[in-house]
Image 1: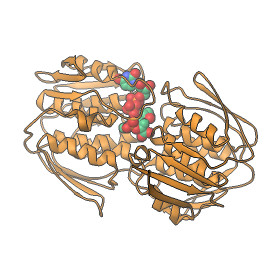
Image 2: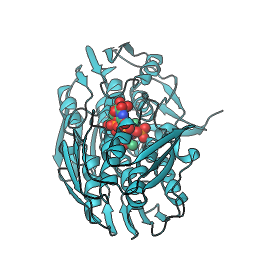
Image 3: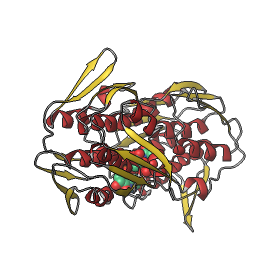
Image 4: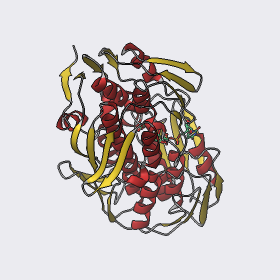
Length: 420
Ligand SMILES: CC(=O)N[C@H]1[C@@H](OP(=O)(O)OP(=O)(O)OC[C@H]2O[C@@H](n3ccc(=O)[nH]c3=O)[C@H](O)[C@@H]2O)O[C@H](CO)[C@@H](O)[C@@H]1O
Ligand SMILES: C=C(OP(=O)(O)O)C(=O)O
């Protein structure tokens, strides 16, 4: 087990390249199961979640090769020898459920454990199943294993009670080889949905409306191969932006899409952070004292729940009272307890966190309770006086590639050490 040991950083300075997006890459890797032909997926950092997804895909009998230096993966799912994934890999991450749509679409069968992922709420899969059932699949759940079967998936209209990212992706993938047209209403519109749709269109799928709340997919007979570069990770980019803001720094982000970051940029601008496009990338620098914020997480294009914890770290040092309302996940404030250890003043009232800004945070021993909670602790540690030790960093490594190296290149004092 490793930990991060971090000392106060005066201000982050320099240039950093943002990696490909974990949450876009994972569904696209699953979608490679839809076709017999080889697919090349580029700009995929070797995060633990990615390696885990590749193990799941190998387990079905697909050929997988990964040039980690070049961040390029080739998957050939010509003939699958198994349609079952196992607890050891699937239980580690939420995205393991995303193989269900492709397997049902191509083979009419899938057997998989209930997915894992960050412990940020109960995270049911009822909306995924509701979509599959509407398309003609039957499901059975016993001892935590879900068995899905369908003669052939058929197109239909599906209204999602909530614009779930995972359910939208799974239903899209289930629909691409189905008979007829599937219409998903109240669909998620996140950039990761558009990236998946772009990949699927590249292998021959017929999809319209991705990026809006109504997506229409008309099934085709078969799909081909393709090469697809994954979009930049907007959450990693946002995390570095908060890093510049919290340390009073001045950085340039490379490999970012400003249009994916609008809600984050708008909130940073409100609290005195200047962000502008320059020839090298996106320039982020703090101008004056951090101002408090009112912030509510929402499905895209609202403020992303994955940026909520990093913003709580920022608000802990703002001049005044901030209120964060978490509407997407019912239990995504576990970082607040760890931030209290560092001297933050935070009160949780149901779905709201009330944050009274303090003059300074102090280095302490803390634990990453989930991926973005861990990122929030790193950010607080950079700004805090003295030394912070962060345990359980395996959560952080699910979603941030070489975060310690990238931060050191910006002038941070962060070391990786063995935990006793
Ligand atoms: C691997 C991945 O891409 N993870 C992201 C994805 O997670 P994920 O796809 O799990 O998130 P969803 O959009 O599905 O979940 C949003 C809300 O809907 C609920 N829900 C979801 C499905 C369902 O069948 N029933 C149900 O009630 C969830 O419990 C949650 O409260 O989108 C989230 C919301 O942007 C992000 O925080 C995660 O980082
Ligand atoms: C919550 C996240 O991931 P997962 O859905 O895989 O738990 C995340 O990326 O912030």
